[in-house]
Image (cartoon, rainbow, N blue to C red; front, side):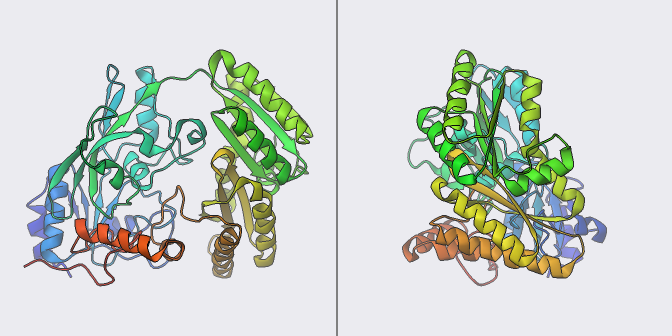
Length: 466
């Protein structure tokens, strides 16, 4: 346990005002969006101002055998930044600088930079940063890199790892290393930058990121199509992705359509088994791409198809997908998950979700990034209702079992955090699990970095040096 004298010695090694110990402030850093009932209370929160601060924190942690939980915006839904009793929560929110270089089409950003601000800075230079996780307006780039976040745009443009050219990483011993650079091929030797993407703060703390930017695409054309059954929408999506690369291809199930309609009152078809939303930003070719998508949807039994080249109308067409979280948050607590099953089994997944929801008397809606076979089941229950929370948690466990039975996987773009560690471990071969643990132990031998997240090399507490 860290006493006040020891924490004062840490404060003297850091930027002024970096260390927070006030109980009310510590309380505000206990939870992330997973709202873990077992969240601890940190001994201190350090709001690092630069790489040097991060180095000093990790050196101090090793010296004192104290865990460190790196934290960005705290939007993890899997417990990636939930606090640990007596540990240090290392907040990177102050490290939010953004510098765009139009000539090299790169941006150097701090891990605390909010994703929407990075996208806006790129757009101001006539460039585009594609990854767009659903929380892009509030999540941080550091968190995106830590979980290798995606979003609807990844259908065409790829995920966060496709845009990370380089980074500065502070290792567990406090040493800082520069990985990659400003060019795609700036990686002599092992491509170590990619090792840290998706590592969820367990291998090192990223303090600066160099991102690749691309030319700004044309304004998207948008299509929506209703289908009587999820299997029809899934088949249409397979036809579309076999023929072209839409910039977005999403499918909402019937439950999601009804939640969106309750919230938006847009006259959505409540009887539809699925709603497909597709976009093309192919410029001059966008109109022909939408025409092709319309034919494919109709050939798969779409009951209605609407298309537009108007940007404002297109945003309205796309609005139901974004409304799901807003609508459910108005009425209760959320458990948002991400799973992946082969698209041809998507209808089995959504039918199974409906059965699980009925069995546990909870709400489950789903939206799918169809081209990537990635589905977000979202569970909702009334705030403060402990029995409903227990039912939702049980339903989530059944969802994971269903996904496994359908030949799918559970840990996908939200990361693993605490909540999915057991699921991940069960899904890996003994050899692969051992390899992950060897890598963790090699770079963090005292097990101080986010020890309860992803895959720890050790089951014991952090070790003190000296």
